[in-house]
Length: 481
Image (tube, rainbow, N blue to C red):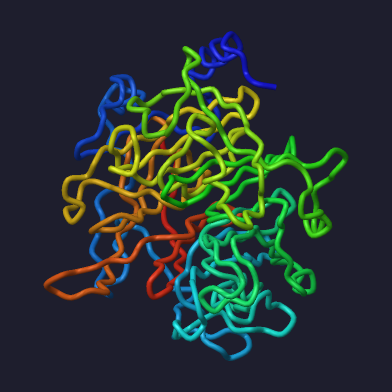
């Protein structure tokens, strides 16, 4: 049922008041070129009224040339493409991306790590090995590995799924599995593929047998998937699409009546099970919003209706092109998602001339399923010089911190960071990639990916995508306000 203007006005009045829960993100703006937060959040005063700098202090250069961290923090390399080995003796695959951490038995932490490898296997030095029984398409290079970190520090790694393509982000489920997303729309016969791609697959880090004979969750649709979260109360799946020409969409999958989630249940769904829908936003005056780049103020709230997708498997026309003007709301580079605070945080990485609204270098939105609204919680102004320390651009993977606020992986130009956004609306640097994969004259730094905390909150995991290095970061974590 569409949301009425009266309902929307009432709900935005409530949503605009903010939510006082652990992990809730406040208004945020970052220099340079940022749009300022309001005075109550921009000052960042402590309980005694004095100015308190956010974060953990300045980043300290790494003598090893890998990762700059604040004083008191340290890192450990868990996997390194071409250096570390899988249990099979084969090399760790390259191009690390989306990751989630799960609690295993006897103090073990299990991480499922995507490998964003597109196209033919021959194009990559370290593709995901074609482990027997775990292969979807033998022509594809991507997939996931499972990394086991034991209490004594030992690390083991094995294949969770192989033969998938461009495994970018994804999301964990309430039943402790991983949903890996293909950011790809290749049909069989294209780019060396023998099967259709553009799907979501489930990987169980706890049970290797459950990963045998991989099957796509076709009910979630076939498009350039980025990330996915599951509403643990209602069972809905929310999914982002990283695509252009036209810009991608925010999706919702509504399960069929009587369906109950759980381990292995997604494999039982019919290809057309449930309803796949795309978001359609409107402002408090009831006016349609064509693109999320139209929002220029932190705290902007839009109502959301959901429009059914005509052909979710997109045999002839990509899903995002199946809608006419005025039917759905788009956004450039819809990226990472994280479920927290009763809703879904999701990213639009940047907007330029391909978007009809204002240029920006990153947004984070919060979708509230109860109120059926989205609220702009993070807005990063255009960074005029990303090669200079002090600003950020291109948020991608995100996680909600157990210490408050967000931790965001940067995938922009120039310097690449992990940075935090406090609940009071301020940013701080947490790590900087110092591994130069370019030249001294023209340095280049790969994006950060796969940011997530261990189940006990003591370790932050993140990866450097190129060449593919998974890191465990520890230090004097404390509550961020």
